[in-house]
Image 1 (spheres, each protein chain N blue to C red):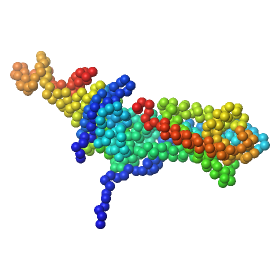
Image 2: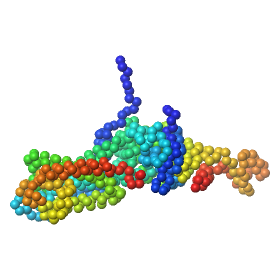
Image 3: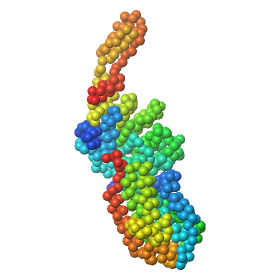
Length: 277
Length: 278
């Protein structure tokens, strides 16, 4: 019989398992902190409820109301909020309050931190989307599509859009000098983008052309357009910038932001705050 | 057990711009030893400890922590180190048990989280949010997280700053318990009585250098310094205090009025040391 080889030390848990532990800790912290919940989770829902109630009327040549037109765009803005703003501010806070430092002092594989953050953002984003869809269906009579092809479109737009915004948010977290400034640093570009992407200002086809051009450089405009193609009938197309849903272009722009965001993350991510050199 | 010291530092240097924080520092910490790095603010204590933790790059010098260069380490090395930093403001929304329990997951041979919480005396607060803890309780939580992985070597950076005297005594008892378990401890402090109460050895750091390195009893020649005998009408330094007191007793025909016998306090020695160096 061969001798049994005993490993001297028990093994450290895998990055995947630790990532799951991180995700539960992140989610608990997120939902217990009222600021974070209000700013990233509740704000899009409140805006949808408010603007949806204020806007009135039906677009000519279709049976789509202003509120119904707003709803899919707000889902895109909600995804951007729970990924871009959520990750940007929470990572800036982690850098500022000693979270990253403590984690770097523990035997944690760096990937476990990112797995935790991304799972947290994913859960919050799915929750946000369900809330926004619920408001749209209950309050504004948005009808959910029955065609599986439309849900397939929803799936890939959601996945690409959320990934692009999440990676951009992780990269942007390094821009904030402190946790306190992170809210402003992340919210300003978000609000500006929401306007020039035709989320708050509807329909997007009515925006001045220079603003549309700038908005088209960023992922939010394309994610919103993708979600409108899922929930709205083609009779609304005359209100778009071009009378087509442009699925190919949506996929292209969002994928480009995923790749660019990943490159930015890998090149700019700082574990240490500004004083830790 | 090995002969390699837990910490070995030779010629460590670190500058920030024009400011020299650590200027050629040498220090050894043996396995199982409790060493206090004592010095005023800005002496280079935190920088040195952060370099040992692998949290800061050094400019020059040789550093070995548990046999590895902390600038190039892996997670197995990390699993043997415990770190208690000066200013943690994280984990606020979690309960004490959630926070300690979470960090236990990272370590292969961790303590039971409740045992770590009990060790630092926070059992009554286990289900409270970290946000609600007082400053002293918060630092004890940091220690619980620092020791939940059963580290061989624990770094404590000014662990009792801002404590009231009672909290400080409780904290000292905690550190002694950890030392009794065989944990090697390097702590920085600017409190003399803390160094004296806890450390097997005190290394006084000043201007980024070690200016004295000895047991608390012998630091700066304290053990061999002449004893000062004071009484109502006089004061005399002597190598034979018993003889002098016997003489005085005869002279006064009984009790010597206002008699005190003292060796230079650690504080006298320390003030001499940092006074000389600055």
